[in-house]
Image (tube, rainbow, N blue to C red; front, side, top):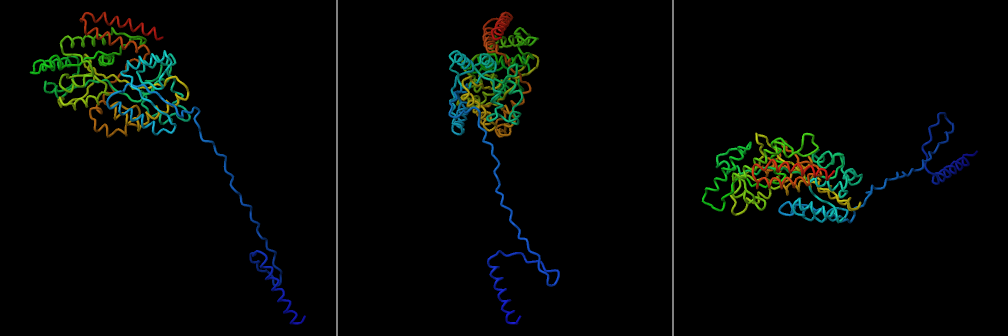
Length: 477
């Protein structure tokens, strides 16, 4: 082949290669031949794997409540119709109404005192027009549960959607939840707070009268009460004559407090009935009768906060929930700014006790949607943050431990209230029996009769109280 022909052939090969390169994707450089003149091995062009588009895992549908409380109205019967507790409860209700995501509306209606509320609820049981939420003593609620007027709360506490977690349930003080249970373990009442029945004691005035400490027994109690009465009877103010000692309201809670301090519980030895002829009750009756007859105790037509704030009473008996009212009474124009405190009830021979009782609520047996809406409000009301607001506005004590850190400032600012925490070890509770609803009224009636009668009447009146109590048990079985 001539040189020119060879040159033309090479040039044509180069052009053809360039054309092929322009039409095909670039390949990896061919491996260097191992031998001179040997052709390179054909190059494998990798084939791209198809792109895998991730397939979304099927998602679970959001949990929905089995019972929908949306838009329900909850009628709440309570006993906090005056003062700061009323303002606080109404503020809590208003906040719930404005913020709950279910559009639930709570209507809070004051029913007066506990006895008034019980009468109203008993009438509602007969008419069938029940409120959705009611507060009251657990013994009254035991009656209402027995006639299906209120419901078992366990399904609500353990509800998969609206219930309390295990940690939330564990935060409640054991005694608080147990206090709302029937003997078979049914939870028919839920604790929102608790309080203690104590003595209000004017320690500043007592010191002027020569007494350095609260009374530790009946003899010391009478000595201080009568010294205060004598001071008022002999001063130059005739308006306070006949006052100065103990403001005596012979209701069941006050009677029980003195009995507890004597080591009694108003029950028989078998624990299946009442025994108001027990010596611990007799000692209480004779002590109160002696104070009354000695002129060292007197009655008032209303709560004795003004009398305590104006040196007309050295002692009054009150729940710790009454502390805000007593503080308010000391702000009145005629109040005497004495140092004062609270104290446990003394026993005849040196015992001491306070009467502990919780503030419980129950759900009326209406319909599933209203009852679930009611539980949603109870859960809100007993949450730590809301319970802390209720404690600060009512002077009750909390029912769950995780509320305590939220009220540290309140405790520091309210030393008298905080001092009451130390009495809880002395605390006893009134019988949580259905019959106690009737019996506690009979106790008040009988002890008022004791005050108006003679010392010799006490055995007969207490025996009669036993008979009435036995009949009440029969009627509730």
